[in-house]
View 1 (cartoon, rainbow, N blue to C red):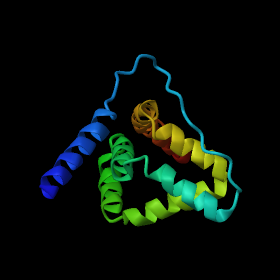
View 2: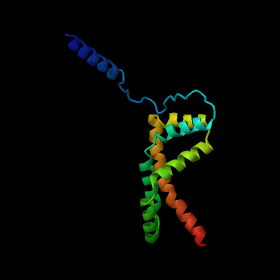
View 3: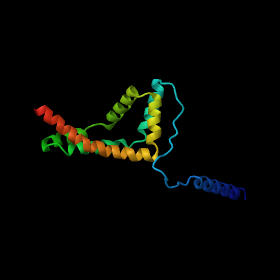
View 4: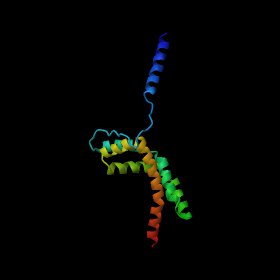
Length: 151
């Protein structure tokens, strides 16, 4: 009898918890973003905030989309070289470099604000569009640099 009561209680709790987490359709294009309370701008806080910020992204997919944008506009020989370089690149090197750069450039509060924003639905949508934007801009930048280098 005790086991039955325990199971009923667990089922009731699960139903209560999952019932409270229904998602309503977005009614406006703007979401309220709750910014964390200001923290001391220490290296430890910046590292923790940078880690939270990076967790809002699918870094592997971002690197692949950016690389595809660059490779797409290169001459065939350059494509082969760049594809080989990209295939041999250890992603942890890129991830670590990104985190180190974030910690050097931004304050802990700025990184926390970035993590808060990009963790929202609208932030994720913007992030995906930024990848597309940069993927389209990179070939233009590469072409401009190559023209400048060859002139």
